[in-house]
Structure formats: C-alpha cells, structure tokens
Image (tube, rainbow, N blue to C red; front, top):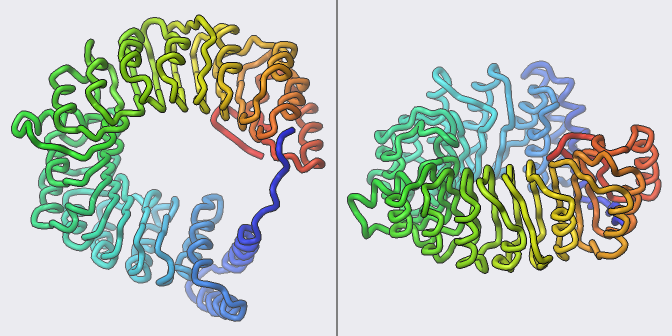
Length: 486
C-alpha cells in the first residue's frame, strides 16, 4: 500500500502561517508611507513573539519564490526582512519597473549576503551603474547568479570587489569578451583560487569565443565546471596547442562535434573528468573515453550505438548514469545490463532500435526514463521486472500492456522501492491498475498523466476522494509528462 501522508513538521506549518499573515498585512500597502506603519507593526509583533533570526531568511525566500503574488508584496517583504541575518537571497521574477528598486534595496540592505540570485531581474543599460555599486557593497558573496546581465564592465567590478566567489553564473546572451575575463582575474590571486564553478554562454551556441573560455580555464586552477558552455573541448584544445602539459581540475566536460584531436587534448589536460557530454562525436571518439579514469557518467547525443557498446564492454563497471539521445543503430539492453553492473540511472530520448536477449537483471538501476524508445512489450516487461531497486519509471511511448499484464507482474514481482511510474500513453490500463499499483507498491507516491489511460474524470474524482479519506500519499495527475501536482 502506498505510504500515508506524513504529519507536516511544525516548522513548516509555522512558517506557512507566518508567511500568510505577512502577505495579508503587506497586501494593504500601496506606498512607502503605508509601508512604514505596517513595518513598525509587523516588526513589533515579531519581536513580541520572540522570532529567531533564522525565520527571516526562510520567510523572505518562501515569499519571493511565490511568483503568483503581487510584485509589490514580494518587494515589501524583501524590504522588511532583508536584514543582516539573511545570508542567501533569490529575488525571483520582477517586472521591469521594479528593477531599479530591487537593486537599490539589495545594495542598501544586503551587505551580509553570501549568496545572491538575480535571475528574474534582467539588468541592462540604465540600471548597470546601480549593479556596479551593488557588487561593491556585497564583498562576502560566495555565490552570484546574474544570467543575461554580465558584460566586461560587470566582470571588472566582480574582480575588484568580490574576492571570495566560489560560484559565478554569467550564462545566457551576454557581452563578455577576453577583455572582461582578463580584467576580472588579472592580479587577483584570491578570486582565482576560490572560483570553482562558472556558468557561462548558452547551450549549443558559441556566443562567447572558445579562446576566451580557454583563458578562464588557464586562470582558474580549481575550476571544476563550466556549466551551460557547449564547446569546452574546443577551448581545451586551444590550450593544448600551446601548453600540452597543462592540467585542469575539470570534472564536467561538454563538447560538440568532438574530433580525435580534441579528444586527445581532453584526455591529456582533464584527467579528473567524472561526467562527459559529447554531441555528435566523430567515429572512434567514444572509444577514447576509456582513457578518462574518473568517468562515471556519460551523456551522448547523435551517436552510434555499436560504439557505445564497445566502450561499455571496457568501462561499463564504472558507469553510474547514462543519458542518451538520438542514437543510430541498435541499443541492446541486455548487453548494458551485463557490462554496467553499477548503473543507477538510464535516460534515453529517441532510440532507433531497442533489443534485449537474456533477461539479465539491472541490479543497481533505480531510474529509467525513455521517450520515443520504440520499445517492444517484451522489452518493457524486461526493464520492469529486471530492476529490483527501481524507484522511478517514465516511458513516453504507447504502453500496450493491459490490466491483466500489470496484475501478473505486480503479483509476481516485488516493486518495494517504486516511488513513481509515469505512462502518459497507456490506453489499455484502467482504474484497476491504479488500485493495484497503490496496493502493491509500498513506496509509490506518484502516478503521472493518467489522462492517457482509460481513467475518466469520475474515476479521478473517486480515487482522489479515497486517497484523501485514507490519508494516502499519492500524486494522481492528468497533467503532462514531467509535471506533478497533488
């Protein structure tokens, strides 16, 4: 039987109650003059109730993340609660008229912040001088997220005033060049030592030249991740041409149309890579991944299945996750089960041909997600019954199993670990299978997109009434795949 809904923690209930009270109070504010009185009343109330400093950070981030609220309520919440005890702030999305006010408020009251996420406040042109002053006033930041905002001048100010950053997100469409990167890092040993993650550029677009990214890699000796940049291998190759003995600490590598020359440079300069993502690699490139001793996650797009199988024959025992898309050729699940004994996650989008032979179990596999997989019914049954640790199963193809098929599997095999099963297109399954899944799977809490089943709105209404009356912790949702709702 699916688990019962747990009793909400007292902290969660209290925080929700206090947030609602604060939202109600601030919804009456229409000007700064009104705010002064409300602020005095609310502050007095919090003081009399003995509110701890921790609650202010939890409150401000809870309310700011509630984007359905009026921006004035979220702004005045920030103005009231952004005190020295608030160390982490994510603004959420604000409309353009609030940009200046939000920046000025953070500049004045956010001196003690160590983490700032301005995603949702897209600062440009007239507001940039305030942004520069804000960076100057926040010297303690260890994490700064400013996607779509950065330019060379912003980088210059970061280098001048933000010396202890560990994470910097300057991704998106930006005006960053070698000039800005050099200005940020030149003569700045403290920042160059502390920065480990830089999100830069846009997926699939070389909007920042790879030679400029190479400068980042050269100047940041502890850099582990260049998130959102798709041409890291190209940048590494440009370094290799001038300094083949250089070594990076990169743990994540994303490259497009990788050739053998680039792969040789990656192997030579990036011995610590744990996750590698290659899109449309040249023939023979996949085989070279075996030379990267720390790799345990592989992500591929537009690849040959037979090359992947040859690679997994050699290093499959090390692989914990496979994230694959747009394959050519035949993908053999049995062969993967044989070679990848420690595989925990398998995600696949667009399999040209899927096969299986002997039903060798995936003893460690917990997560399966396959969209456009051309799976036969026997292959699907193999994946379901040969994964004793399976926690989540998502299949985007039409499911040809019926209630009797599901009943036989659920009665015969134990699905003790199954937490979520999403079949968005299962026209032969009915409420009988829903009942069985809830009855037989003790950890099941999510059934996604039942609109693709023989499951009517009346069935949904009845089942929700039953789960509510029995306090069953299960998501029954007619929403699209990847969406959840209670």
